[in-house]
Image 1 (cartoon, rainbow, N blue to C red):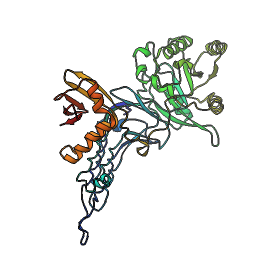
Image 2: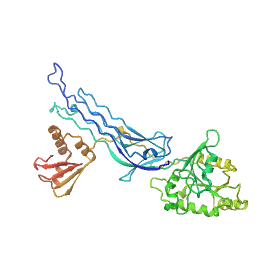
Image 3: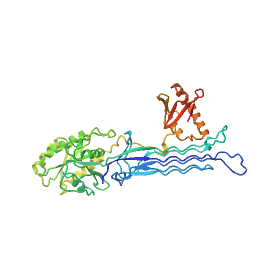
Image 4: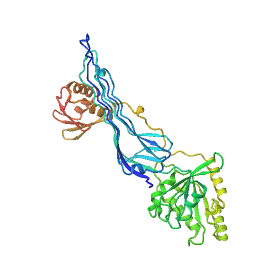
Length: 441
């Protein structure tokens, strides 16, 4: 089954807790803190598998969770990192944030990776918080929660050449004739319900990938027929082969079919990450198919009309293989002389080690309502969720961070008074003691 669009939820592992332990050794009566750090939670990572051509594996399972990191231990022993969860996806997969609609990445190269949800950092053990004035801290950090998000995966096939045209004009037969692909072929409209990929050889060490796109009909760009479902696969191609049926049994005029299909290419709404204004900007070669049963006069007339319009035209027969060699070598020469243009969205992706450190200076405070304020900022929010709020020493350290970062001063400027509620992430604090500018749970 061909599946080219799915939504899944990815949940990275939480970081492990840091340990709050002390040395207990013979002859060392005042052993210092030796709590180890917690391990990082596992990340959920998408990786391109060149052997996949569909998103079918994601169809029946919609939630993916990576394991958490192990907790730190005494004797400065760090917890083990949670294993990353690797999800295999076909080349050509676009990754979107399903809620915000933002493009997160464009996976095009074999082995390429994208961190879809980063694992949480492990909490620091109490040995990190020892100082000359506080030599025996009795607290450690909790692990940072792993990222959690819904993502949408859109597959746009990666093929050098796309074969387009009306239903039943011989697109699948052409792909089968010039490549190793063996699509199902029958003599009725919409035989091809899914795109088919084939590898075409044009001599020693010369080859390209070709894909036949299910038949386009009038108003395909508006969702008629199968067009709206598969038009987006054309965006990835570098060159189109427009197949026209010249057999006397269709009852249609080939050049009129040509105009209708091109009109649908022009109307189709190209997504923002594409380098195209519309699909009609892609170069086209025309293949006049079924010339073995066509009227010679119609072949000459159609070829002249389209050639005068600036198109390269190749009379062929996918059944008898007439004219196929000339078409294949022209396509190969064109591709070699026109290097692939990378999509605008193709870029290097963050790995776990590249993730930014907590920034405690980048925060904002606003008044949400009467007696209610909210403090936001990725860095300060993560510090709060990693603080053991049941531990008085840890809570005192958090208060000092609020004071040092200017949060308490800003809240006072906004009009915060004793007893008002201050929300950081989903945790509520009570603003208390206006003179000392402190927050209490």
